[in-house]
Length: 205
Image (cartoon, rainbow, N blue to C red; front, top):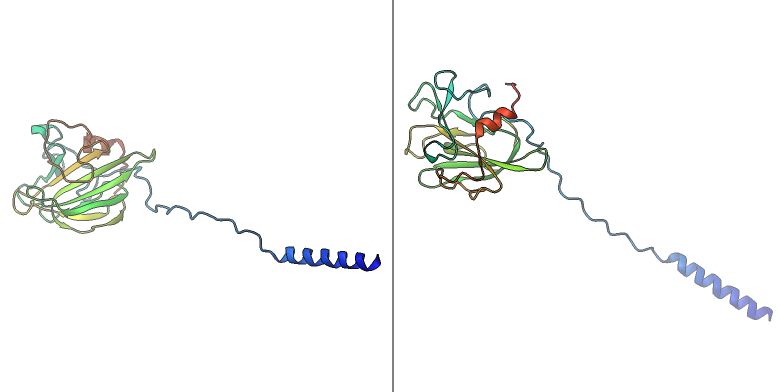
């Protein structure tokens, strides 16, 4: 009887030791989503000039809006220097807010070089700013900060006098993330750039 008891105890000790050597199942931890480093586009500034406080009236400031949203079915704004002609050729163009470049290429006849920047507003809404007729693209991809230089004013490969064509679009725009036509009587999805900027602008240099 004592021998049987001895063997039972030995077997139990052996099983306990074996169980203690089994590694617990490792938990599967999902990798976190990449975190965006660009801050939300909570403030906006004008894309031209040393001072982002720019008016829309000719002769009242260094820059003026020569063709507004809706004029002759225009889908944006055409920014010119008051000195006229091609005096603004090669002037720097700045992103109007924090964002990410999502298009940078020659947009074809009538466009020349085009950059599109996607901006995420604090509420999660996205808008895009388009910069057309550029002489040169200074930055082709990645994140940009408000008033960071992204290009130079041009003339759409000699098609026009130098100026900046600026558009501001919502996600329901039919031309989201592509140059599009520049003119249309149907302006659904397009915003007035200056009005939008003025409502979200801080007067810093």
